[in-house]
Amino acid sequence: MSKIAFTTEIIVILCITAGFNSVANAQTASPIFGDMTIQHPFSPDPLTVRGMSGGSIPGSKIAGKAETAPTGPCKGFVDETPDHTLKLTSKFDYLKLVVQSPADTTMIVKGPGGTWCNDDFDGKNPGIVGEWLPGTYQIWIGSYQENESLPYTLKITEVK
Image 1 (cartoon, rainbow, N blue to C red):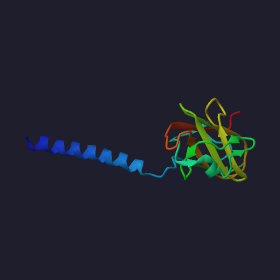
Image 2 (cartoon, one colour):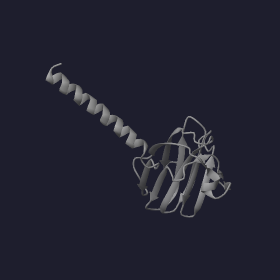
Image 3 (cartoon, rainbow, N blue to C red):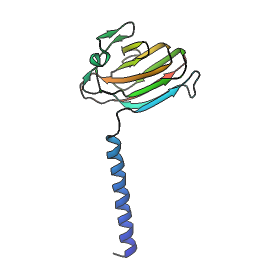
Image 4 (tube, one colour):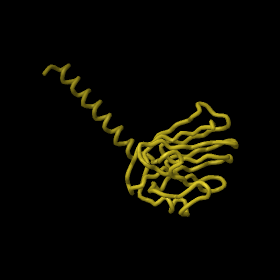
């Protein structure tokens, strides 16, 4: 083997190894998939972030109750730490958070003024709509089976 071919082979191996290390490091990263800070009005609308639902902790334990009125039941299993943190720097007279997933998911939101849970807002996708105060909101996306991870997109919009 020539010196050039050998050097090229080492570079390829190093690049592949570096790629594997990046993937391994990504899996050990914080379970918060995206922190967002927005004010009224915001752009682009809708704002979307992605994640993987689920965990081992019952949603009712995170919420501290079995149901929140009028938004719904605190079902499913979630991680101990929230999947997303949403900071609102101004009041929103109307804001909608909706999860889009190929499977049945749940949502818990904790923030100024309380805790809200939802299941099946739009088909089998959870969502929460209403007036939102300025402050920081923690968002958990749950799965119905313990430790089941499902891909989802969280859509945040001011459009009714």
